[in-house]
Length: 247
Image (cartoon, rainbow, N blue to C red; front, side, top):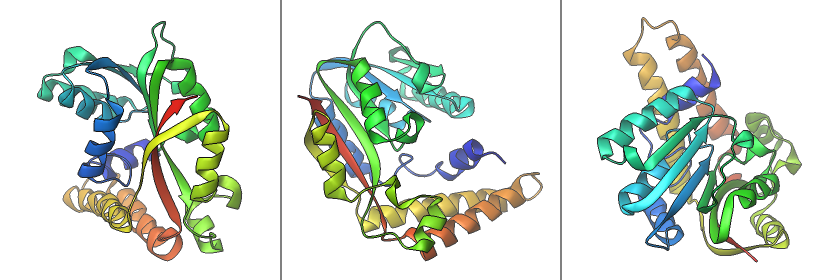
């Protein structure tokens, strides 16, 4: 079972593919969608959950999503039709690094997908290329809540320098010419809800599909992820979502 399929199954019952609650997502979008109308771009949209929520909240906005997971984009199209916003969203099966558009966007999102560009600052550089004057970027990134242990690094497959602490992360963003206008640090409860949903949803899919050739792999992935979280990075890896404007 490939990683895209595992992720898609595991996120099926969580609001978005990141450790944020419904209320946190709604508050961030309400601040990000400051104008009555505009265009939003999500670079690494997955099932386009952020974009679909934006379109539901703002009937005069349009959206574009880019992702390499064709099955996730199919689910996004189905959700858009169910919400009645399919005419206001364009979805592209494409590497986000290759996406181009002649018109700029008032809002660019990259939540938990900065790795597509090689890290936080390269992802912000890519977002800047698509941003309209006075536009905003909503970016979600990991950070170290505390010094990572060997177990945490092993569980995440990360190096100590892959993330910084929260203060250093925000300082780097500011030094790169961005002004944080609001932000949200995911709470321990949001993290626990997210991880239990991720592992539990994937494991339950395996239980409900015992004859599926990937059932064993799905259950093994859920069990491994749960162990890596509980015995590795729980309380060590944080997540911050920042709303930014250019200087």
